[in-house]
Image 1 (cartoon, rainbow, N blue to C red):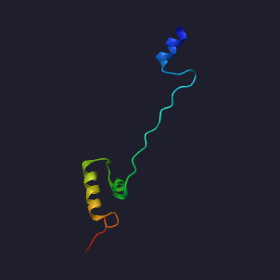
Image 2: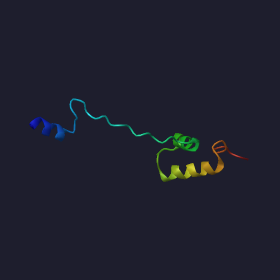
Image 3: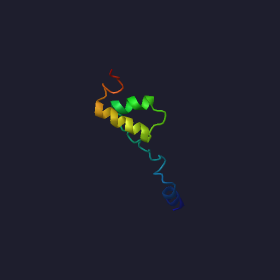
Image 4: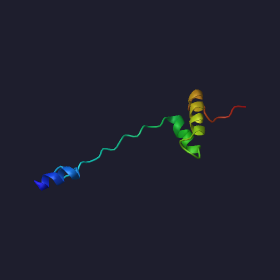
Length: 67
């Protein structure tokens, strides 16, 4: 009787404990990777603004200066 109560309180089923599943991390797109490399603080309002600008221009064109 007491063993059943202790098992319920501890949250274990028999001898094996429940395994927690890891949450999948969202993958960063090209622009987010580019900005994350150069930004001092991630995430920040400044960095997210740069990601928006990169997405407007396109990842291949962002950061290339034009004269």
